[in-house]
Length: 91
Image 1 (tube, rainbow, N blue to C red):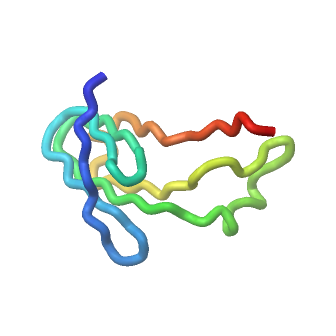
Image 2: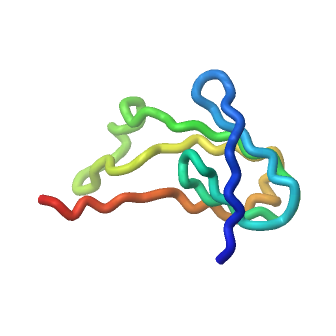
Image 3: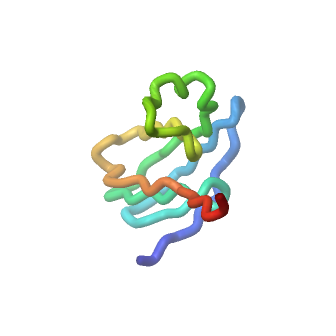
């Protein structure tokens, strides 16, 4: 369960990019996203606003966490993404 911490380079428009140089499991130090890859790959990602997509969420579901746009230059290399989550225990 070893994850290498990576710090992304910030791009314009709130985007982040990481160049992962080898197979492994990597965790973004800023967003908490975890990427599992089978080879070297470049991943670009950003946080989106729910305002554009909230109407797609049907009741009883509610918007409850961050929304990410993740792009990868090799779809076969990216085998999984673990998204951060939160749990509100108060009320």
